[in-house]
Length: 79
Image 1 (cartoon, helix red, strand yellow):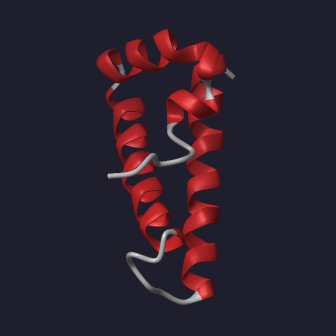
Image 2 (cartoon, rainbow, N blue to C red):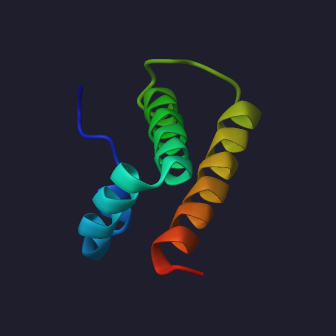
């Protein structure tokens, strides 16, 4: 598959070790990261034209990705 933008390692390039540590040691974080990854892949397929859908649905997915990213960010920073 082609390069998928918005992967967590790209969103938090200075936190890759922390991302890995949290994925290995925090079940809730691992679940969020997996949900983010699956959602991000679906958005990429839509944006690249592989999976057609409505604009409203695509916008809803992007909003969900943003909420997940915010929650992941808060866990990375310990907020």
